[in-house]
Image (cartoon, rainbow over all chains, first blue to last red; front, side, top):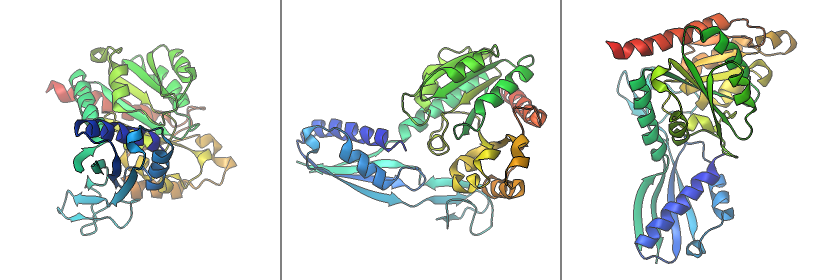
Length: 114
Length: 222
């Protein structure tokens, strides 16, 4: 639901970095989106397509890679991908004491341009 | 040319939340982030909770709303300090908004600070504010499938308040089913069945808040 504000942060950050690196045309922005961020790839794409952008982004495309959730059990130390995201418990010992290691990030991995 | 950024956009919020948490720790104030759908009764629950606690605990409320100061006015009528945050369309509160709002609060003098998040069962779950506990409020009228459908909010909630239990006779809400879902998702250690309107069940909720606020006070003293 907050995909618009997330994408405007992406645009700002890439714009700043492009200026620093003397890039006038961005072609690809690669994002990595954790499956626990409640940010939908389709909604991110849509937000990117409708938000007003600098000429810098005229031919820019978003590439989004979804990132699996990775949990670590506090009781038996197993690190694993949960079978579903509704009930989080250890697939080895059944403990509910799990840390979310990955899956809550929304990162700009890199962008390409010239 | 490829520019590697490896920039986590949500990290800025986590960093600020961490700073808020340290600030609340230093002030020894219990901070409770109330999350629910619109209309679940967060404001009514606070309206009923405040008069029953304000003689023993020093309270304040941060009110998050998309627009209007309606809820803040209702809380103000209870005679406690309230700071309104209008997100102007934003679907959740973030740690930066809380950092700004707390500048106007005498944190050192407070025992318990409620943050009433924007009514929304999805986005607020993703934004740590630096609170001690998230509390999910679910009302009977919303239906008994909500914990399973919106697990993120319930998973992170230290306590769940089931509100409007006075409506149970008029709905097909299955209390057992919802209790099971909440147990499966977060262990269900602190579940309070209340009617903010009639006052039923509020005592256990108040006892939990008292205990948590006192624990927070004691934690730093030792």
